[in-house]
Length: 271
Image: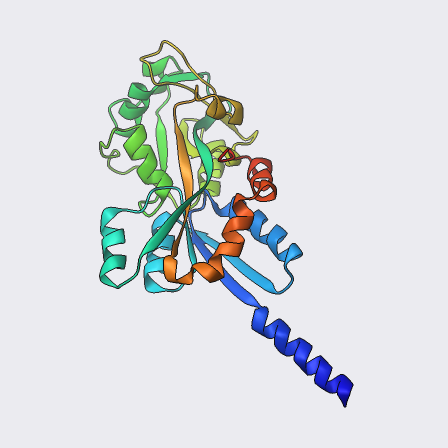
């Protein structure tokens, strides 16, 4: 009888301490969250963390609706999103968990290696339409972008296009993996992806933000030494009233072990 009572007490204790957390949003942040969650759950058997993508806007919308605990985002929360949360009596906490260098990628056979920010702006707004206009072969340029719900879509528009609108009819992809696949299969294609998604199937462009004086390759080293110009913070957002539930996982991501995972996945540590 004593054994039955003891087992019941232990089970009740485990159930009481068990915590389930949901993370949703940015596809760029997705690989970081997945690796962090796997490692965290290995060390904390009573904890459950589920991670899904969909885009930064989707994650922040889910946070407002109360269907996720953490919104992962590759852009800063917008004023109107923050205002809606405040109107609902909720305050939101922002945590920078890593940094990312946004890489411009083309088909592996493309002979163009260097592009200025101005040339990129003209390509993605539709002013430059042929690779021969930027030193390449006589071939139509096929620009790819992320969907409008993507934080990467908005960051690229802000940093590279200086808030000018993308060209009409640009090819919009639902996920970063789709960008890589499309560009690897389309000779005249160009697009942008988070640094961790770079692979041998595409070619990374060296970018100049000083009118062609210097061109820099996207890499962790060049992002750290601040010579690569297209670098952005990656965020977690959560409702402050749920901090006691969320904080142990956030602390883990910000710990030395968590930041080592950030580096291993291919992003830049916060320190």
